[in-house]
Amino acid sequence: MTSHVTSPLDVELHIPAHLDAVIAEVTDLYENEVAPRERALDHLLSDQSKFLDQDGRLHKDIIAARREIMAAAGAKNIYSAHLPESLGGRGLGREDMIYVEEKVYGYGVGLNPALLSWSEGATPRLLHAHAHQKEQFTDPLVKGLKTSLHGVTETGAGSNLYDMKTNAVRKGSDWVLNGTKAYITNYFDADVAQVLAITNPGGGRQSFTYFMFDTKEYANKGYKIGKLYQTMFGDGYTGEIHFEDMVLPESAVLGEVNGGFDIAVMSFNYTRMRRAGMCSGWNKYLIEKTLERVKTRIVGGEPLGAKQGIQWMIADMYLDWQQTRSLSLDVARAIDTPGPWWNLPRPSDEVRRICALKLSNDESFYRVADRALQIHGGSGVLRDTDINKLFQIARNLRIPGGTDEVQRTTIAETLGLRFN
Image (cartoon, rainbow, N blue to C red):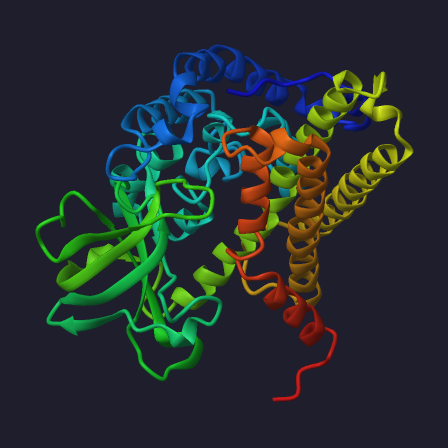
C-alpha cells in the first residue's frame, strides 16, 4: 500500500487553474475509492507471493478492486479524460493530461493507476469505431465498465509491423482470423479485443486491418487464451492469445479495411506521450520517498542525508525529474497547438518530439529509480517494497511502446539520416 507524501516538490508543479476541479476530483477519488481498497488489500499488495494466485495470475480480488476504481473514475469522467467529449471523454489535451497523470501516479504504485485508462481501457483507437460499435464497445470502455486488450505484438514482430504473421482472409462477407499475439497486457481478463492483422499482404501501409470483438462471445469460436508470461515485475497479467479459423463479420472491422497501419501508429504515439505524466508522477514519488529515508536513517550518529555523496545523488534525481518534465510539457504544448494530436498523418518534426519525450522519460525514470534503490540500500533490494517495484517497472518501460533504440533511430531518420 502506498500513500502520498507532501514535499517541497509540490510547489513546483504549477498546475493551471483551469485544472483545479479535475485535480480535486482525482484527490477525492483517491481518498474515497483507492485508499480504502488499498488498505483492505494490503495483505495482497504488499506481498508478491500473495499478489498472484496459485496459477501465477494477478489475484482476482485485485482485479475486482481495479475494476471498481475504473468504474468510479468513469462515473466522474476522469477515467477517459484524454478522449474527446464526442466519445464521452473530457476533451483534455496532452499538456493538461500530463498534470492529471502525474497527480495519479504521484500516489505511488498501488491501485491508483486504475484511475486512468491505459492499455486495458478506452484508448484513442475508439476514435475509429463505427456507430454500430458505440453501445457495445465505446460507451462501456469509456465509462470504465469494461476492459480491453491490444493485440499487435507477436514473438517475431514488435516495433516492425511488417514482420507480423497474424492474418485475416475474406470468406464471403466474413473474415477468417488466424495467428498468435504475444506479450499482451490483460490477456486473460479483457472483455474487448482490438487486434491488428494482415489483410492485404505486400500492400505496404495498406497491409493491415484492426478488428474489435467481444472476447467472451468468441471464447469457443476460435479465440483462445494462451500461456502466461511472468514479467520481471511479476504482474501476472501478460500472456498470449490465439486465433484458430476465427470467423468475424464485417461489422467487427475497426476503422477501415486496410487502414490499420495509421491507427497502430497513432496508438504507439499515445503510448509514448503518456509516458510524460506517468514517469513524472513516479519520479516525484521516488524523490519524496528517498528524502524521507535519508532524513530518518541515522548512520554514524547523523542522518544519511548529511552525507555529501547522498545529497548529490538526490540533486541528480531532482535534475532528471525537472529536465524531463520541462521537455514533456514543451512537447505537449507543441503537439496541442495545431489541433487534436490524433489527426493523421503527423508531421515528421512532431514524430521526432514524441520519440524524444518517450526516450527522455524512460531513461530519466530509470536513473531516478536506480538512485532511489541505491540510497535505500538493503531495504531497496527487497522485492515487495515500492522502491524495488518502481525500479523493475522503470527497466521494463524502456522496451514496450517502441524500444529506446527505436526512438533514437526515428529521431535520427527525421533529422535526414535515412538512406534507404
